[in-house]
Image (tube, rainbow, N blue to C red; front, side, top):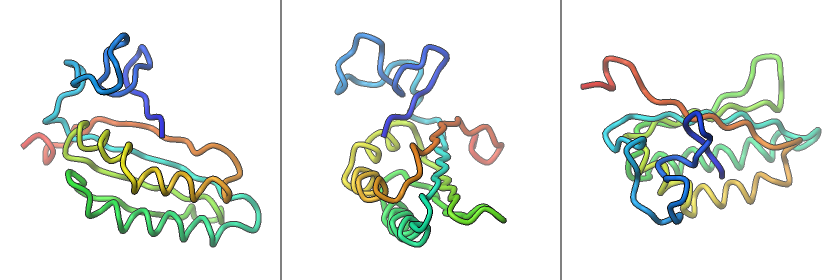
Length: 132
């Protein structure tokens, strides 16, 4: 999965010329809570199959180090449109997760059931609870 962050569209926590395994740069605060919101649209007839792939992903993701929460929802009145909302303790935990088997397996398994590319967005947490 390719999640981007910042005005210059750099991969999260990686400097423009740094190799992929470089340590995080100053824009990736390891203490900062982050959220990932993914919207997935099933192709016609594949709604149940995509829901199954995403539900398995949610259960497995909850056990990943640094995962604070992850939820799966279906859009009211829009069968086949699913939202996955993940909350992570810090960017580094999210990055490790996205490169790991759980996320890669979900992306591979979901591909055949999708009407198009999922919409993925990365957010930084700003609630008072997250700042303590």
